[in-house]
Amino acid sequence: MLKVWFDFSNAVNRKSSFLAAALLLFQLVVPSWAIAEEATTPSPLPTLDLKVVQKNANGEQYQIGDRVTLFVEINPEIANHATDLSLSLPKEEKKLADQGWYLDSKTQFTANVLRFVVSPIQKGKLTLPSLLIQKEDQTPIAKTTSWSIQVNGPEKKEKESELIDIVPISLPTKYLILFAVITLLVLICAVVITKRYLKSRKLKTRQMAVPVMKKESDHALALRSLELLFKKYPFSYENLKPVSFGISEILKNFFSSRFTIDAREATTDEMIALLRKEAIPREGLQEILNLFNDLDLIKFTKESDSGHFKEHHYQDFKIKAQSIIQKWALHTGGTSL
Image (cartoon, rainbow, N blue to C red; front, side, top):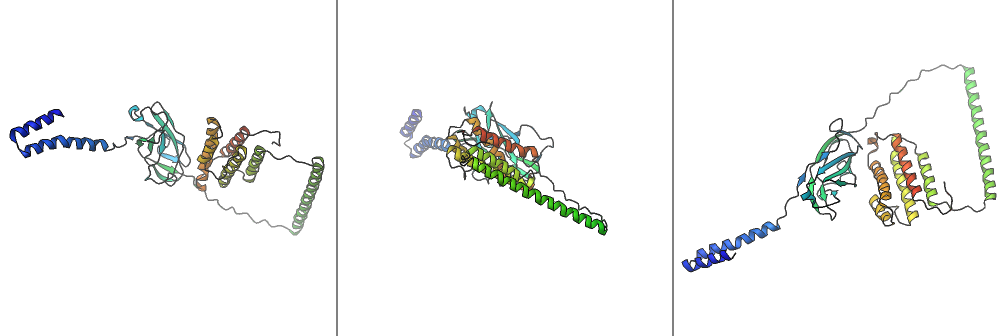
């Protein structure tokens, strides 16, 4: 800097030229502008390749609801000593559900590799858009490439109508059938009346023996509601949605009463935030979050695209819900199931 000014002064003294002074002054000022402009220009985010942990046996063919594990390799210079990274959708993109995708909020970052799980929820050619990779303070450090697959759904089979041959019935046979039907109806009515009588008599005896009934505990009420729900909606593809909504409502009511919070109208993330304030351990919160993520996947998937769910998945929901209720039950000597 001093050398440039010294050259500038000598040039003015030797030539006394306004033009030479202007040129040297321009060389002195312009680099400062260029450096300032270069310093304020933000550098673009690096784009990292998105890869599949385990490729599908059918290549790029997937089914609705498949859990696909993806990963990106992150250079240590880009990670900059970050210990926990998350993913988010750019603001200009549509919601992932509108684009046919479900993104699991849980991520794993170890050995400079970020892993996460996505599930397709629509049929056809789907493209997962580029996602932002963020540090703990929500600062983006990189972005992923897009990823395209072909998604198939269950095909509906048309039932063929079966024709029943007409069997002629003689007059005596008709009377025998009518007599058998009437006899069966009489027996059914007698059994129903007898059961109702015995039930009412047993109820009267119980009321006389126990005049005061204890209030049903929160966990007992939740467990009984689960039993009634699964009895009302046995396993079928049409019953997956009402069962998923029912389990979610029962657990939210249980948490609201058990921990004295208002989680009945809360979303999954809002409910987890409320439970975190009640000092529930991280393992317990993760167990609850995993169940609600599976329930949300069914609730926001079309009914016609749920053919991959089997009866053991249906029963697993009941077992996991019962386990959570029993784990956080408050036993005070009241009624229990």
